[in-house]
Image (tube, rainbow, N blue to C red):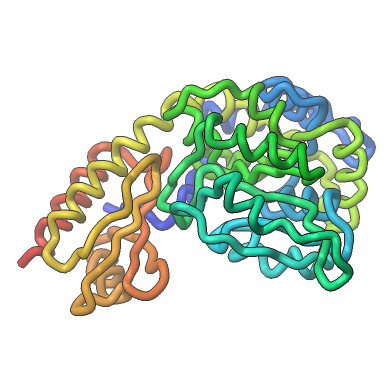
Length: 340
């Protein structure tokens, strides 16, 4: 048995998703003529109460397009030091937008209005112009930690007061929403841009959608083209996204329960120093010095269980659509055997 906890990007399309992909009505999306892409964009924009949306090949592209649209060179982006837009998008903020970055140390990646306010630069030629705040929900390196709307609201009001734009890297936003029960349309009210990934916990093979105003998406469409993201008969991929939104949101709670079971097993191991609180589908364990992350990964891999080292002394497991209860049980049994 192979059990792959490396990432929730590893899922394969389900039979129902494949059927919908094969039957999609397509056209040329660069001409705006792919009706399935248009339907996906309209669907997600409506869900979040936003005016328009743009289908992109990846979450990195949708985030980088948003940052490019919201900033200009000599501006500054405020985000957490562990945020995806800073750590895992290839230095794209500097390369694509010519903007600098103000890194903050949030609570497991979550920022507060007070922290952000203290980091806003004065109107002085020696400093870049504070222009954009980026939040991540859920926070990958925070072990799937999430914001509630009540946490975001003070940040929204601060950004309006200080004339800052507010973007949400919502790669795993639905993992947060199934836990909080928060209103999606209220998110749409608070953010200038939201990126939603379809190829993580929702199980689509490819794709992310950027949400925003008509003005933002018009500009974003041009930037997407420049970045090489203008796709043609993309409706086959968009159909998978529509299927995922219709069928895979509610079941995310199952992934979260699987993650909590894994965390409980990890906490019982003598060489595990601790596990970050498990809020959603990401489990991050810190190991004692006698067990390196590489050795831990290799021992599990020998039994068909795959996970990732996540920096010195840390390992990560991510649950997803293709992880069954039987697989979780098998993994827990193998973890228990590592006590000896």
